[in-house]
Image (cartoon, rainbow, N blue to C red):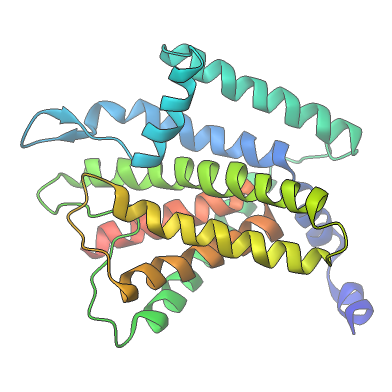
Length: 255
């Protein structure tokens, strides 16, 4: 059956799928999202207090950078550039550099599709839950649309970098070297469950969120974290980050 399906999939689609899931392509297209986010960061204010509002995952990542002495914004860009260089060298070693410009709009369309599917799945899972959740934490309707949109982009970038690119990848690396007699699928499921649980719990640790942690609210985000984790493993960082950002943007416009 798998052989038959492989035969009917166009070669161009298989090639796109192969190269677009690489870390190099993912970091490359997330860079576009990051530039848009940083360019609009001046709009990210908590209007009531005049305090700059940042996504909590962004704050956590940058605090780690600060701990190691990277206290200036341009140094954060150097870290990202170093990741790009590493991913480029890895892609060259794996012969995964045959990336076409058309892959970027393909990835955008694919991510939009997954975001719509994610929204439908989350709505189905939330039926019967008396909850009203926004993915990137509680976003006040008192904030401007521009501010909410910027925070949605920030969530897509930094939450995927933190919980999928770093945490999920690290868990897979650790399990690969500790659970050596375990099947790869078991290690992947274990890593997905742990990263999704931490992803869900993190939202309730946000001091800016007024949401009370409940079992239904926790599992709501846990399931979403599982879905995003599967997208990351199957399609890579870029598609996962754009899916997350688009889903959050949908929520902004629905509110």
